[in-house]
Structures are given as C-alpha cells and as structure tokens.
Image 1 (cartoon, rainbow, N blue to C red):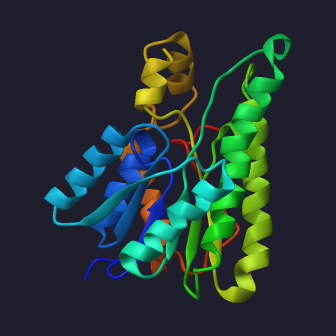
Image 2 (tube, helix red, strand yellow):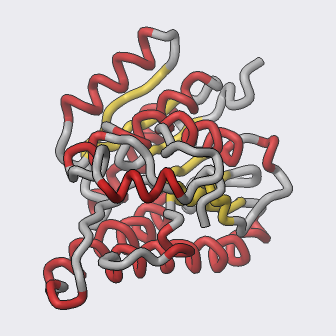
Length: 248
C-alpha cells in the first residue's frame, strides 16, 4: 500500500515548479490532492490531468492565499470534495531580489502578504479540520541561512516561515499535528528560468558552493515533502530540513 493512501492533501501554489512536483509526488503515494493556483488555471489543470492519467485523484482550486476568504475557500473545497483533510503543504510564494536602495512598500507587502500572511491564513483554515496524525509542511528556503545580498525582504519572509514552523509545532503538538519545513536551495523551475537565474553567474556560483555539485530539481524537494507528509516522519516536528545539496 502506498504511504499516503486514504489521505487528503492541499498544496498551495501547485500549478507549476516545486508545487506541481509536490502535488504529483503526494498523489503518487496515494493521496487525493487539491492543487491550488492563484492565476494559472491552465497550469493547475495540467497538473491534475497528469495525476489522473497516472491513476491518482486531484482537483484544481483557485484562490489567493493572502486573502482570508480565498484561503478558507481552498480548504473548504478539500472538505467538500474529499470529506476530510490530513496534509497541508504551504508552498505558495513569490520572490524578487532588490538591493536596499530599491526596496519599496509594494515590494515588502507583496512578499509578506503571500509568503507569510498567506501561510498563516491557510493554516488557520486548515487546523479546523486537521486531526491526530495531521501534517503541515511549509516550503521555506535556504536563504534564511545563507542570507544572499539583495534578498533582504525575501529572506525576511523565509526567516519568518522558519520561526512560524517552530511556534506552530509547539502550539499544535498537543493535538498531535506535526509542523515542519523544507528549505530548498536553488531549484530549476519556471520561475528561476524566467528570472534569468538559470544560466547566469549566480547559478554558476550556486553550483560552485554546493557540495553535491548541481542545483536542485523540483522532484528533489517533492520527495522530501512526501516524507514529511507521511508517517515515516512521525517523530519529526518543528524541524527545518535544508534541502540544498549541502549548500549552507
């Protein structure tokens, strides 16, 4: 039997990149998956099609996690479709680098609204339904450890995610709900390609400082999330697993 058979999972920001890989990995392990998207319905539908073609179960659900009503609606869709909820993966995120001279109020609020407030609102909606054995996985970033130049706001949001992970692990532990984060290094996704990172000097530097000698792929992260979602990680909570090929 697959490790997540009978489980229901919500993956925010699941229409592409790491989120899409996570949704597919959870479904491959037997979970029924709600693939959330903010703007790319076509991308989410493509992920759902891939999951169902492989014999899995999934639905696409739109919603902006930074809006309380939308966050609640995403969770409500999981309950209405599958009847319960066991796993929440807070993957939605945005990132734009900017030096201190170029940081604006808009830049700040854009990042914190999605990366931090969105995580809190979705988790708030989910914990009403999560019970003993429930697992929350927050997708953070290695930037909270390596603090690269030009990333003050983005790094601040991921530092917040790491802190929230620890707080909620203690807060929800008495209810036997586990909360962990996975902190990826550089990963080859649509976002890193469109941002010009792939093929840049920054990628060359990242590879040179990574002991395993390459940047990550979405599946590298998805398999770790699937582990944290499963009972194989039943004795882990409040952990931040740095998934960076050794880069620190």
